[in-house]
Image (cartoon, rainbow, N blue to C red; front, side, top):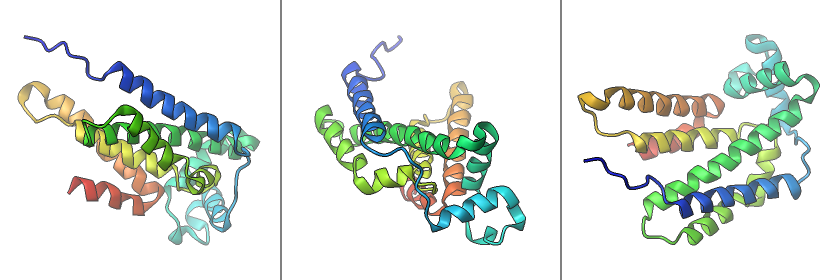
Length: 195
């Protein structure tokens, strides 16, 4: 007999999306959408241009220069603005994933309280500032949380769902690896939950 219970409650879906939308509106409306450059930013830009010949190649992760290179190739002179918009979008999706993780961890918690907790965490001024910075700070958060969410969704293995297990496991591992490429320290978050 097939179980027809919905995977997610409509109110939960609406609450998480509304909370993510509030973060997006706050990021776009109440902050200057000007890319912030720090001392490390130049190192990442130089690595994206010179790769292995860059002076600081051995001191920086390779994932963020790959993202810079991609944004330069697609958006040319506007790549910095495209990069912070990309980071804002990943930040919003991170907040939605975080919302679901809180709700799944504390199943009997009120969805409005989950939204308040999520907004409290993600509307932190320091976090918003790093979303606008050309640094690998907000993008690894998304990939680490996505990896954890996918890892949590891996069903128990049997012959009927072996491909589903393999696909979800692959994307979970790929997300963890990409978080590692962007900022290796974020892998500690993934390993702390996996183990």
